Length: 295
Image (tube, rainbow, N blue to C red; front, side, top):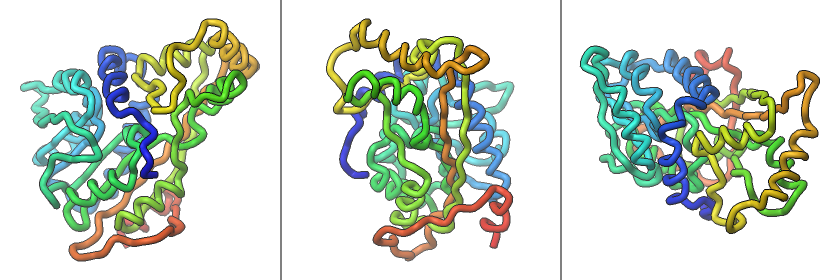
């Protein structure tokens, strides 16, 4: 995916505007982040420098600091207001030490081969050029260092997507890569031994409008370049909500599906070439994860 389809400045504005409300509604994001951090148990050597890409309000920083108290910790995000919220994790009593930097994940302002662990929770779906992103990740990672991240998959918000599609043909919901596409791009960038798995979460809401309100509070709004200009009319929005409400379940609530991809891979050893061409990525169950990573 090299053709730009996202308005990066709009992404930054929307998440910046949501900085004060994000933590209040980011229940799923925290749960996914916790499950991603559980995978750190499989790292064979404690990292000395950790980079958290898309750190947002810094939710992962305390746990990363707790696990690796001697490591230099850097949080990076595109939205400055998010970083200002992340500053709140600094505390003399908690002894959490980290640095923050505002930057585009596609152009990391770091030296080559300086990071032992690159961590990213639910950020990559907001980057429309994964080849550039992964090549940049490979550049800053030391040979054999770890990359671990989560991202949303194509089933995410499928109910809302279908409700919009019943009303017009304009793109309203972000598009997401599936597990195999992510794995292919990891291999193409030269990463080794990728381990990927998928989970699906279903959140339930009393009314369809609550889904839209939560997305706004998260900053996860339509940032596609080809989005329809202007605001949706009240009449059209009413029709969208009616189509969504038709999915109401026996308990009276409407579902919202979130598909989450988890991935871990190692940067290639020094001098190893980038793999070229399409490759089918091997996937492993979590039960096989320890054996696969330590073989």
